[in-house]
Image (cartoon, one colour):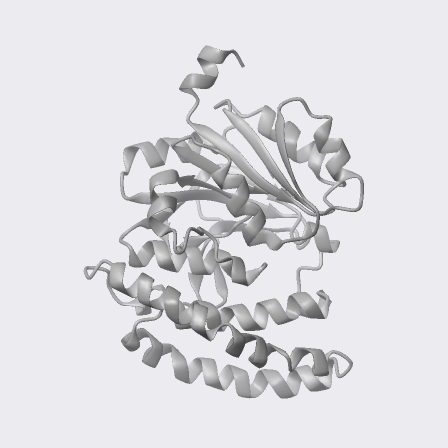
Length: 323
């Protein structure tokens, strides 16, 4: 890309890498082949030990930022996004491979709809062999209910973090205490949290079938998609972050609507965890204490979010699906 072309480019890519050596070359090749050429590719390496950081350093068109230790998905992506300055930012997992028109298809929608914060597309999930939409609705337990890989463009509650094109002005509006993704999450659930916050601030999200991608899923964990396949550290993130998201974002009426189903799920979940993986259970019991330690921060974020929310935003109920 020439200097003149770069000055007109409107999209930069932001990635966070942790031991992604198996996926990076294919991921970056797909980025370089986009029909809408990218202004910049920024990769934050979270203390990888598989040689992937050295490989990234050899790529002339990649801006590499190194963390000495794994600071987590959220801090990695926050730093990557902050290192770009284009009007639109592609947030991409290193184990996702975009079809050539992914960015172009998403950008067309964002430029036509000024209140659309983010657009995603249809994913082929390699771990399961399924085709799903990159958007999602909410389950009552504050989990994703993936949208189908529909042939119809639609508004969705939010988008997964695997591959999505964001409007920078929306991300800037969503910042709390200087952060886009909540760094207290480390990983898991941060895409639900950001989606909910954007919606409270009056933005919306869109799924388009014309943007297509392949996604391995949990690539840095060897494709451990299912909850019980993940290491206990990451299981704790999943369990804890649901409540962080709920406590920060839910209005009182939404909380009352969700709470019965959420409590019922918890009553079933914890005995099941004890029976299914008793060797993990003592470590999982740290989860409530981790949540309690974060309550002062949660309280600050909740005050900031609720004081800025758009009063015209409707009830959460219309976005709840499944169980």
